Amino acid sequence: MTSVGIVYHSGFGHTAALARAVGEGALTVPDTTARLVFAEDAARDPNGLDGYDALVLGCPTYMAGPSAPFKEFLDATSAIWLKQGWKDKLAAGFTNSGGYSGDKLSTLTQLMLFAMQHGMVWVGLGLPDGGGSGSAPPDSLNRLGGYAGAMAKSDTDLGLEGIPDSDLATAAALGRRVAVCAQRWQRVPEGVAQ
Ligand SMILES: Cc1cc2nc3c(=O)[nH]c(=O)nc-3n(C[C@H](O)[C@H](O)[C@H](O)COP(=O)(O)O)c2cc1C
Image 1 (tube, rainbow, N blue to C red):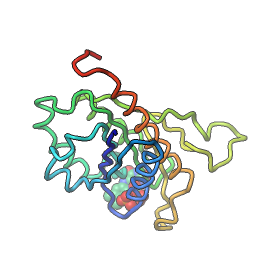
Image 2 (image 1 turned 180 degrees about the horizontal axis):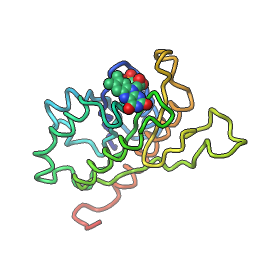
Image 3 (image 1 turned 90 degrees about the horizontal axis):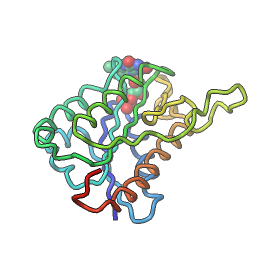
């Protein structure tokens, strides 16, 4: 059995919907557990995440980076970083913003570098750019062409209806990929250098 923890912040519910999609995707892989964790709770008790095989980090893009409550969680892990307590744990990320770009890559880059500082192993999205060709339907999987993680665009005036199904499906694909990778990763005998 492998466990996936999905740590997220969502100010207005859009990123929460994506987090649920990541969890649903992870649960399509047999022998997987997936749990959603509020970043606010994880900031108070980051060691509560120690037992997960993989952590999927998710937050909205606010002012071109991770939202402040999510950054608070990231900073709260510094004691774990000091001991490299999450070394070799799998990590992945997703973000959501109002703009097509909205500087989402800046957020994913910060999440990825956070994982690198911890010695974690980053799992990218693993999907081709779904929106790059003129013949691509606008609702393709990975329509926003992210590689470092799952990207979503939420129309800011439409509430939760503003999240396209394709972006939810892209988030689910990330969750599934992380769960598959976590099972592969478990086959490495303990104590063997990667
Ligand atoms: C403080 C703040 C800053 C924002 N900054 C950006 C931004 O830099 N780029 C962008 O495209 N959208 C930006 N937005 C829009 C949000 O990313 C968007 O509304 C998102 O869906 C919110 O997700 P949530 O409902 O999970 O909080 C910002 C929204 C807020 C409230």
